[in-house]
Each structure stands twice: as structure tokens, then as C-alpha cells.
Length: 136
Image 1 (cartoon, rainbow, N blue to C red):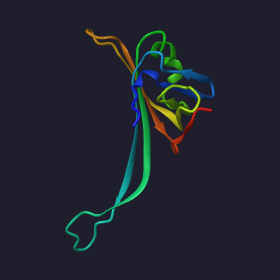
Image 2 (image 1 turned 90 degrees about the vertical axis):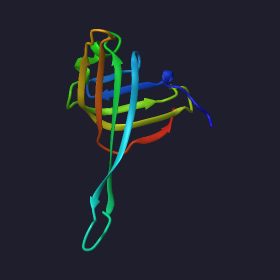
Image 3 (image 1 turned 60 degrees about the vertical axis):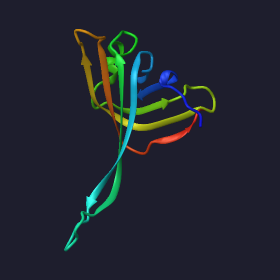
Image 4 (image 1 turned 180 degrees about the horizontal axis):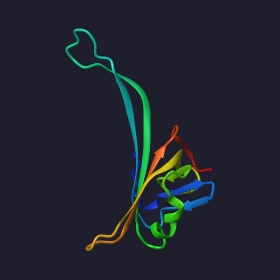
């Protein structure tokens, strides 16, 4: 099985105002998918019953708060902004995996610790299926 590290990751946020490459100073990027469920417990059940209903997905990127990433793009990553988040775990070379999802900016945060580098964290709430493919 092929293994890889995140150093080649490419992430782009595309919205009506243009597109923004976010990987220059990224520290981490994660995508989460979670199934919601309905409680189907009834009558004399001794264990709770659950029925899967729908899937919810989100993504989050943490970047250094430099002018190369977070600070420069702060205004382009405003909460409620709708667009599409694209990510390429192994870079953008032909045939490498690609993923994207319609999303909106759910949260953004700037942190200025006294003993570490400044950081920007942006949360994306997906609004549809994550599409998997390959770089053309």
C-alpha cells in the first residue's frame, strides 16, 4: 500500500470573488464525515435502536498566521461565504487523487499565543456530497 505525508497537500477555496490557494503555510487539514441517525427504540426493546439517516461532512484547515496564508486571505474567508473547497492530498500532478465539495465558511479563528507562531483556523461546512476523482 502506498503511503504519503501531507507536505504535498494543495487546498483551494473557490467562491464568487475568485479562488484562494490555502496550502502555502498550512499546518493541518482534516475532513470529517459523520452519519446522523434516528432513534428507533420502541416497546420492550432492551437496547437502543438506531437508523442511519444522512451524512454530514465538514473540513478544517489550520495555517500559520503569516501574510502568505491566513492574514492575507482573512477577508476572503469570511463566515457565511459560499463556494467550493478543493483538496489534493498528494499534490496536483496528473492522476493524483482530488476531492471537492460545495461548502460555506462556518468559522474562522485567529490565535496569537505568546510562545508559539500565530495561527488561523478556518472551518468549512459541506453542503453536499464530497466528489472524489483524479487530477486531469
